[in-house]
Length: 84
Image 1: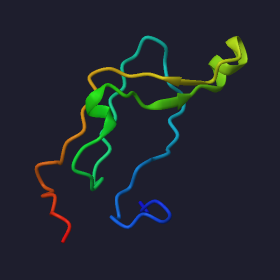
Image 2 (image 1 turned 60 degrees about the vertical axis):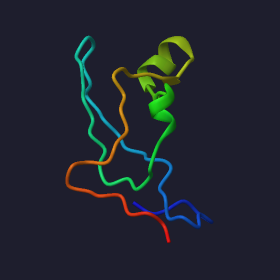
Image 3 (image 1 turned 90 degrees about the horizontal axis):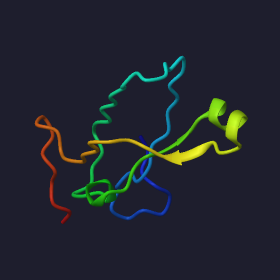
Image 4 (image 1 turned 90 degrees about the vertical axis):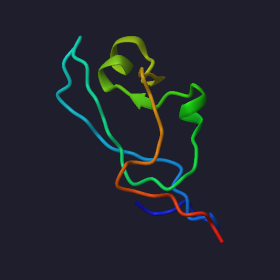
């Protein structure tokens, strides 16, 4: 992943990916690794923003904040280094 444009601390603030053929009433777990930030708004209750083509077609609302048990922390194999 590339750092945000104009970001002096080299943190990556966002991500984008596609998941398809999702099934209704099925729980999915995503592990997004190797972000380099000491903390995140996900730890204060923010949820990821998703877009559903099907929901947009049915209700006209495609973008929604969803998810549960969202956590942001350094992985065991990655030690966050303090910025000099």
